[in-house]
Length: 191
Image (tube, rainbow, N blue to C red):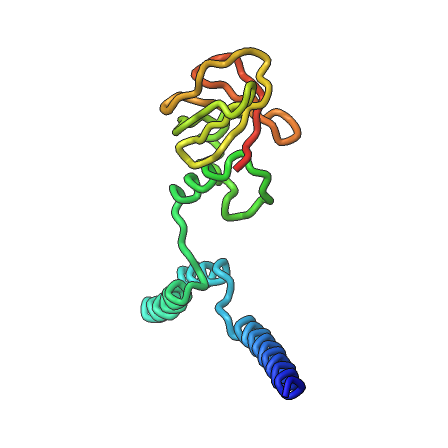
């Protein structure tokens, strides 16, 4: 009887594995179909819209716009293309400040933002702070970033909500951190 139970259990395991393998194969096939029948890239969609400007005949230009706008709206509704405004990108860059991330085209500042961000100093406000050891402080910025200062060269004042903080890039992932205009200390982002 125990041999019968073991055979059934082994059969069920084989069925589950075979079902899992079939599921993975179907998912892979679906991914290939999505790649071959997917939307053109978002840059291509915009270029197609720009191309409509060159059409001289009003009816043909309107038909071109109708067709290409329809394709763009469908891609947005399907979730294949997303529109992001400048303020969302700025907010995201501020939230990610201090993390070692790869460069992405979406988060690169454009000419307007470069002019505004020309300063090497990133400034924000502290949401909370606390001493975590005899010579270790942690604080959170209003963007949600958690920073740590280890072994400051001097005694620093208690970090409090609402304090202004500035960061200037140092080396090896560290930053010079200046709280309320005091002398800067080295620290790094931990979360």
